[in-house]
Length: 340
Picture 1: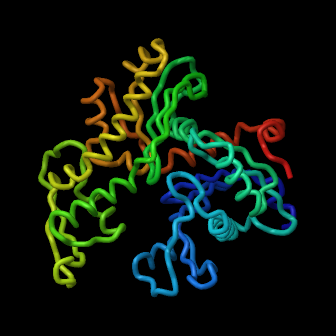
Picture 2: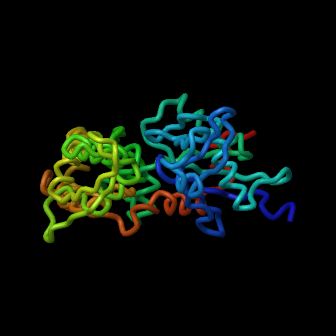
């Protein structure tokens, strides 16, 4: 048993909303919300993942629910390490005699300091070597794109905290842009709309549920409505309101337009030959927020390029990391890793 995990290869997609852990030869072992519940006085972690999510917005004052990752970057190194430690313990990977290698997906435009923070966080939970993999490349490979070809392809990975946009050729990003607008900003926009129009305060989870149930980027064929409950700002008591798809589409218009603008910037700066390829290869959407209704149709209408959503957009990055782990040789880790 001591040597059973020696040299294990682990892929980690540590996103703003969710963290996924893939162990080579076993598959996805962890799929949990990137949340921790912290005791206010001591900073001690009481719960992580789904257990923390269950109490979000309902904890007593002595406890608070925190996201250790914001906009694709580690906002609290200690809490991030604690969360990762708890997740990895569930896989039976950690142990005094066990060493493992980690390939972790990161946004394309992180600074060197931000990259080092991620490396330090992963090494502090026991990784002997760490390989940083461009998130959008992992998403493209996980979605099944033949990115090794000398042919231009565009991927827009829309997560919770950031949107990574890239034109790819020969397994490299040729033109890339990371914008700090994604699913969380959509939720914030929905909550602000409900507060402004109906004077009703709703929490993050309720705003996300509204977005999922009736949100869209273009009009839908059948009218959609959702009933939500919140606290009335006028008299302070609970209140129920009905929201329709048209209202939420209006609320989402600003964050959706920011994503459209980011795509336009990348398209305008891409080399002409690769741009020409996109007429045929189109734009692939990955990430959980790519599931917003008619977002692909909106992008097609804006640019006249075929846009589609990956078959499993939520798992594209971790699937790409799993593929990468199988291809890596020892010398790749020595060259790109950070040996202890």
